[in-house]
Length: 393
Ligand code: GLT
Ligand code: MN
Ligand code: MN
Picture 1 (tube, rainbow, N blue to C red):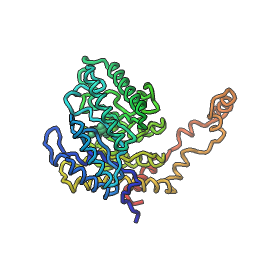
Picture 2 (cartoon, helix red, strand yellow):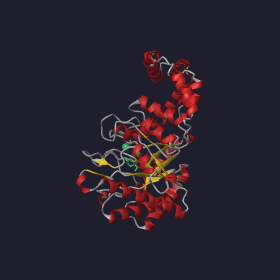
Picture 3 (cartoon, rainbow, N blue to C red):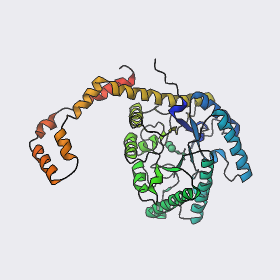
Picture 4 (cartoon, rainbow, N blue to C red):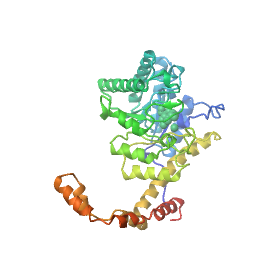
């Protein structure tokens, strides 16, 4: 029997806001107690014992908004002691730029310079906190960076202001000598009617317009790409191809819903499988972070079940990805899809008038009707994958 027990070298991480989620929704009050320093400390022990590698946080998940610096230092010192006791790390940190009413019309994209200045200052303090805790990645999720009323702002101004703020913070890190990489997280809508730069693909294009694009990558989230009706593994593949996958938010989502942040793999198991397969095939070195929370029906024990479930599902799917690679029938079908054509491959390597001539000579002799009539066996291939996932193969 294969062992799917999570271990620290699997690099699983959870946000303080994920296991600490009290289950509030737009129609109902919290169903679990709000996190306190005591409960955070207890949870670090629970997660370490369950095999997690680390925890990530927003500034205000740990230090309350507006706390005086002595209070901040006291909280951080206690948290650091709890990290040492549990052995957990903090690989990623981020800023809450969405809860306080000051951010109701955006933080970086607000038309009001006072709001942008406050947001920048808050980020610099958040970055200091992240660096102090050992974070190597800093995430930006611009949940309020959008609009309901298009008359209120030209979206080009929003994007230009966003760029100015990210450039500013990159320069801050360089000035301080921080070895930190930024990861931008896209979401199409919610809480705003529409959010600027709504997909990972949009973020990737935006990054190339920054002053220091090398420092900035993306943090795709399963639920967010699905909300936009997209295939998450395709967005992640594009980020990998660009060398820009700096972080990832794993969770589950039903199509056509609000952002559900469900336990990883609890919905769309095939989509989750191909995402895990992609990350593992690419030998991606980043953290497997779960940005999800337990159902509102759960108590503390259910939250632990949720966390263990995320990690076990990832390990099971990683095992299935290995089985996929070793499955002779699946591999045979895949091989048949790409018949060996070394002369054509060579001719297509790079254009030259000579290679185009060689390519043309073969191309005009091809039996395109026969190629077009050939069945590709995808029904069988997909069914084999389904049977692998359903555990009968
Ligand atoms: C918030 C959001 C997430 C982001 C987090 C980081 S906060 O929970 O829904 O998708 O990743 O800011
Ligand atoms: Mn997220
Ligand atoms: Mn989400």
